[in-house]
Image (cartoon, rainbow, N blue to C red; front, side, top):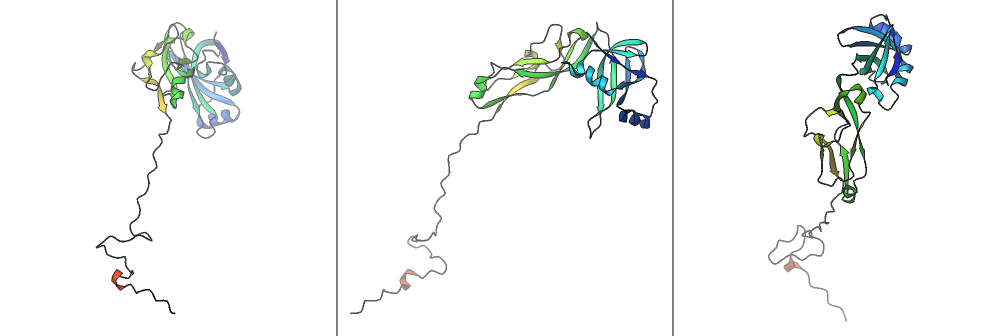
Length: 228
């Protein structure tokens, strides 16, 4: 069942007015779609937050009250402040409950890939969302992908994902959606450093040149004889 969201019409256009509305927790927006002329509206920030607080989040099907008319609609775009991340503008798109629409649906992984964990791997989703085409009544809140039976060499493509009835994935069927990352670090055998030539106590080979400052072997003085 669509979630009801009330809006106000007749707002003044302009950046200064938009800033004033945002400071008053009123979000400027626009409603368009299905051949209707775009209608500029204002929605209460708290009302919008509550309407999108359900399991479907931003994909919630809304019953948008615009003046005396009610429209089935979805949130097409939320524009946020780049620093504060608060919503500064919202686009609503009127839809038909019987026609196919395309929406980005979140991807979540379920299950534990024990074979991957045993080999030091990590299962990873390569995308956050998948585009799904379906009627509003069949749009899922999320796409769950079971990774229980995955091994180190396995990947899951878009074409292999089991979707709810009435849903079709949009995109390249060969798109890799889930893969396995290797996290195990291979042990490297320690390398023993070779003895440095000329270390203290080492005897030069026959014919080798003595180190600088060393006395030639032939110039060595005989040891003193002990006196009686």
